[in-house]
Length: 385
Ligand code: HEM
Image (cartoon, rainbow, N blue to C red; front, top):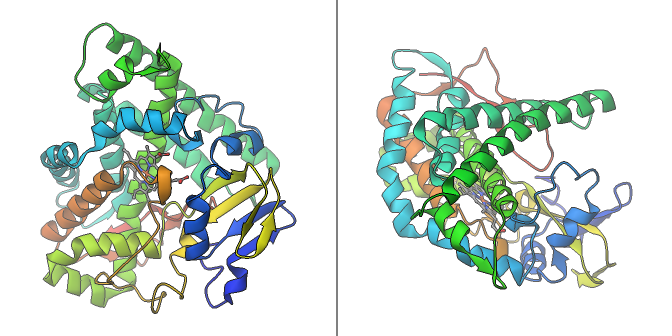
């Protein structure tokens, strides 16, 4: 999907997939148009079209499965937890965390960048946002890596039994995590709090308080949305730099390029390669008629290589200006954690550059990748430093 539009004429920007009975949106302009019409390209409808979503019953507190006006209301409630000030205040803590994680592999000349840094950093940050006590934060890393290990390790090419087994095993981890979150939220209700959970516990929708299950659903979404994509951003960026050593040297020599490096990494290997919508009504997009009730895959990864928008899209250029990459989405669901993710990426990369004069992917141990087609990222990246 990432590369689908590349080199093809613009009329391929929107394409129907007969086998899946789904529509794919690949073009940059077309992705923007679809995301600007949340009433038609609905997020809430998507849950209804998804097969086998029963395990994932916590759709109510999940912004990504909500449409206006409920979406607007909940987004307002939680957005104060993601303001630039909150993100700036978190930076020293995140820097300290990145240093501690790299201290733990100090002296090693070969290690997996993902296990050492890219997995534990973002999950700890989200656990902290949720007010999880420091002593328990490692539990979340275990559960989330368990989910990812199972789901990221299987592909559509595996047998149905294997896919089912992996799904079941992933759900075991998920259930354990939800159980902890339920208890944590019940505990939080006992006293006033001045944080993200405090805001959620006090919030009212149409005169009703959010239920604990709503809040569990929200916390689960935050862990899923805030964790893996940031993990992949860190790994993918180092993979890109290994592929383009000239750019590695350039960024090392001019650290002011690090924020641009993060943007270019999100463009070049978009962790969230695609998102899902469902048409709530018939609609025309790029001259094609899409009927109501159809699944629509919106491909950020393909839009990010649309040659109508990005000159020389296959070149990796941390100084690309402008860089209207869509890795964080667009419109009302634009990534709430984008400032946080950008900061985490910048801090992690700067720590790596500060600490090691040379970083190379280990030629004897090739990286492994997420198998799910809607995500793009390394799951292991053995490096030599
Ligand atoms: C939504 C990407 C990190 C929280 C989104 C969307 C994308 C995205 C593409 C929109 C999906 C859609 O329209 O269907 C990413 C990437 C990240 C990242 C690439 C890292 C590099 C984070 C972090 C957090 C976060 C660190 C929070 C801790 C959210 C939330 C939403 C969201 C809450 C839902 C917003 C809404 O529906 O209104 N993200 N994200 N994300 N992201 Fe992120």
